[in-house]
Length: 77
Image 1 (tube, rainbow, N blue to C red):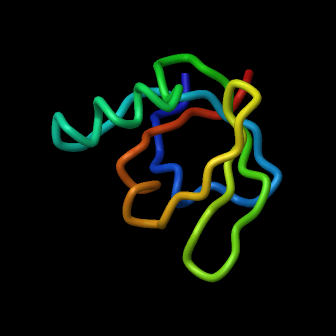
Image 2: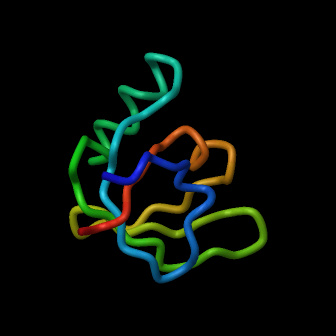
């Protein structure tokens, strides 16, 4: 199994799955409430000027690179 990498390092169009969250408890709780839970598939639909648009559980979210760097993902198998 490939080691997890930060979501901020994932290229546009790449499909991954959440491996974990490396953030403070309050931010981790917020991200989990948004649907960023372990093994949930997500796709980077846009990478533009320091922010990402990701699709997870049928919803799209804009994340700054700082926040995206705290979400760990693995490639889809």
